[in-house]
Image 1 (cartoon, one colour):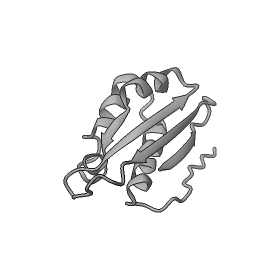
Image 2 (cartoon, one colour):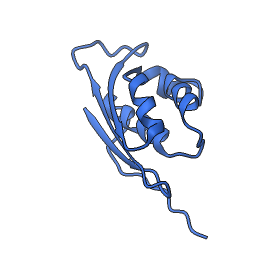
Image 3 (cartoon, helix red, strand yellow):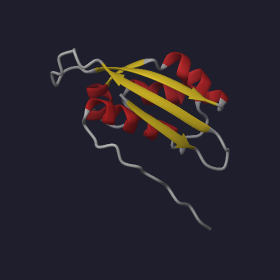
Length: 111
């Protein structure tokens, strides 16, 4: 299991993502299903959370950028293409599968 807390910036919204891997499932390079639990005070991510409950991690992480289910659902409900929520959810999925180490990431923007 991995958890991600994504603070989205100027909007003030937070996304909490929990990704759970069924370790009893075979982890062939073809499929690795991850259950997702997403909560947020963002109305867009509340819609995303209802639809984005499970993903195939390998299809999300190892295929061409913007072609997975996470991006498809994100595009359907979020009007903000620069929202860091989508990358935070994908990073949480990576950690749940063991494809990435649990390290913090950040974006600092100044003017």
